[in-house]
Image (cartoon, rainbow over all chains, first blue to last red; front, side, top):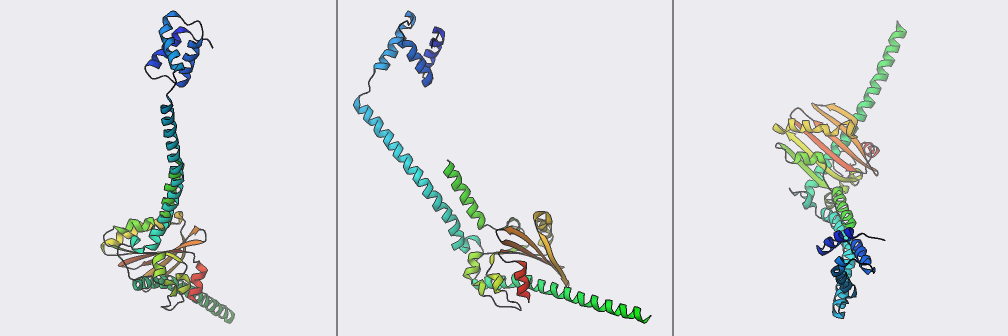
Length: 157
Length: 150
């Protein structure tokens, strides 16, 4: 890939400002590896030569590897822990309200009061249905009787 | 990130299973309005499934209850509570099953299917000077209520 000098200069400015991307640095490295580097960029070529030949000391390499290992271990632990934490959170969210009636009922009620309220509510529900059903039966009986009486009256006319 | 989001959703959903209805929450801080909430855990603790009092065999229905909410008002709270009862309109899935008028009180029963075999029964006891709204959720059906009345 041929890269013109102006582009290289722009990329160098970004490189020295610490704003270049890896791809841009790759373009610069390739450019300086070529034999025909202009004289005005000779100093920059030497910078890239030095950085290409630079070898990190073994203690630095080991420190970096150790750090990466530690980070990976932490990430793996966090991954495993988040699943366990999710399960615990769901269990607590279900269990706490279920096991602690007072948590939902600020004005605490005694079991006897609970029974009374429940009994009252269900008796109203069932009692109303009972009354409704009886009223339906009564109205059917009255309708049948009235109809029969009317038919009899018509027959007697 | 995805796991955290799932965790938050799961917790919110789990909390929702135990939550009181929006109508009930809206009435809790109303002056002149009394509220009573009884959770399934409290019903079990109180042995509600063994209730035998009254003229009806209500123990069977009591054991199917998941929760009970009672909201009542008299005097100054009456108009406010009546104004909130629009929450039980047919547009919101409530169906009026029965309405009985007797001795100055008008009792209406509404039902809403909640899915998963669960139903909500709402009973309005409307009198001249008071209104009681009873909301019952659970797996009981209208047939269970009719059977209890026999």
